[in-house]
Length: 225
Image 1 (tube, helix red, strand yellow):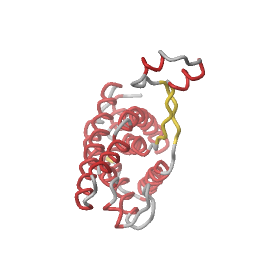
Image 2 (cartoon, helix red, strand yellow):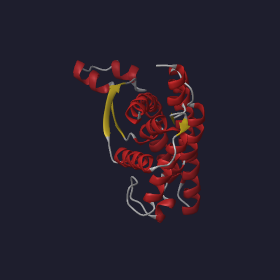
Image 3 (cartoon, one colour):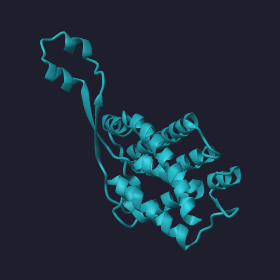
Image 4 (cartoon, one colour):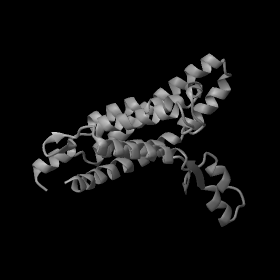
């Protein structure tokens, strides 16, 4: 593939011109919105080894091999919404990525497409800040996702984007908690459940999402040609 063609793919240009908002791009944006909705209601059970805090005390007990295996295997129910957002960013670019997320948020004000429903009242849900944070995260990450980034840069983009989402999501959560006069232990439990180990999963799968989005972007270019 020539450098000129590769440059056009990376900048999302077709025949030397930036991709404009047309019926085709609006349909593609609609499909991206649908992808976010599907990811929102998709739950994947992940199992992998880990080291609990009571490792030494547990091993000192009289336990059999089956108990040891189960003790060091954790199960986590993961919703791949954030990786879907970064896949869309890598596929569509910053402008259309933000357009897709904005469309998702606007639709959510009228239809129950968010995790806990929808409507204007959802503005006062603890988790709505994470959804709003998709926009600045895609803006910052999309600014860095230019050229032909290597694995380290994609990883950095994923880390910056995911941390942006979680920081803004937690700040919004405290804002809503202040309005509701919610007890601090409730807020803390929400923060841990939404931004605890979840951050590591989001970073890992967002790296995969960006990589897959870059490959799908090349395929999309071939189809458009």
